View 1 (spheres, rainbow, N blue to C red):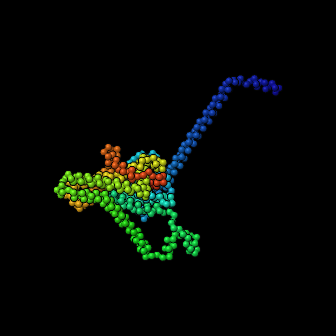
View 2 (cartoon, one colour):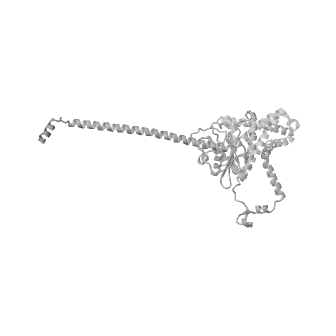
Length: 447
């Protein structure tokens, strides 16, 4: 009975189309796969957006951290003078990240020191000196953001800036001589019995000083104290003394030689215009000869030769900075040590301008009396310096101009005497000095 009922149920069931069933199963699988794929893509996109947001958040956080560190560094480095600065003993500083910066002509310039370099930027002046123990000493001086009226007046500004640079350079030179000796091993070390301190080395001079101080040593100490108390006045006096030496050697002495030769001419001929013009050109030639002889002789001195090497390091580093490359030793090494906006070029322009100015003055005065000639040249020194500064400034901006190249070429030639190829150690010092004066605003130091 049961078997008959099952057979009847089987007969009443509809016929199953196998092909249709397979087709429906395949469609169901495709829909399921498509839905799974879309969900996976959506999850991936959402995940990437989250990752992008997280990456941007991390980048912004890092930028804020770097900005905060730079702000703290700038706040710590804002100083106004040598007595108020914080000195830094440092190993070679890391390269300044200047990737992507366009090439430019910069107003940043420097001066070679004893085992170091002074670098002047638009707001700060810094010295970097290699100490005897191998470390690099860096000291920054905050510059005033404002300029006086006369520092903006053509012809006048050159003299003011030159004198300020001379005073600052003299102070930096003297300071570098002291710093470069720090960390050097003491000479004359001796064991001097002194009870509990027998194991400590003492210099013989120090041992004697502990026993007795002479009146001469006391007076020397008082002189040092007075000099420290009036350091600004001492620096100005030293700068004026150095300036007067240069004026006597390169301005007055050539004219004195020419006036001595006038004794071989009659009084009537000595006052003629043609002879005055000829004598002024002869004076200029003598001035150039004295200048070249001075450079050649000083270059033979061992200490001066090292100064010229630091001068070369300064030029190379500035050229690397102007090229927009990272300040690294390999990048600086490949640069030229000859720079068109160098102080040597300025000095040669001074010589050329002095010939023209003194010649015109002699024609107008019309009298060849030696002491009058000396006074006239002293009075015209500021004018010569002012004109020379404006010429150098113009030629620096248009150094590709054919006429400007004529003024620049002699200075570049003279740099073969005043610059030498530096060592990597010297380049590291130059990099440290430039890093200390690069302005925050990249357009602030455009020449």
